[in-house]
Length: 110
Image (cartoon, rainbow, N blue to C red; front, top):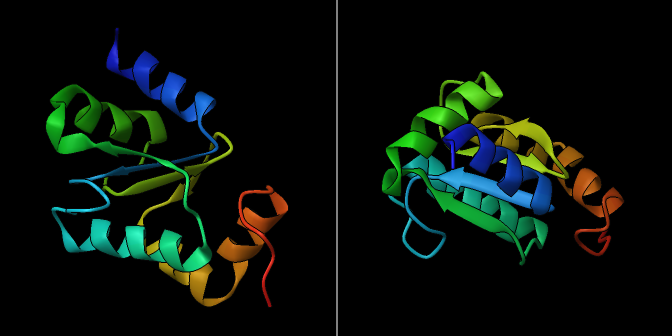
C-alpha cells in the first residue's frame, strides 16, 4: 500500500492518531515524549500511535500528507491538530481538553 494511502486509512479509521518517534512506552525524542504526556494528561487512553522510525515511507509521507515538516503530529477525528508546540499551547489554554471532550473522546473535567 502506498504510504499516503496508509496514512489516510489510519487517520480516517481512528479517532486519535499520534505520529511519533518511538512508542508511547518508549518515545525516541523529547517532543514525542511531551506529546504522549499531553495526551495522558488530557485523559486520552485509546489512540493509535505510529512509530515513524519503523517505516521511512510513513516518516516522509506524513510530512507530505499534513504539509507540516516536523514530528510528532496529532490528528483528532481526521483533522490535523499540529505538532508538539501547538499541542502544548492548546493544552495550556484548555483548548485541547475541550476539543477532546467535545469529540466524546474523554470525559469532561473541571
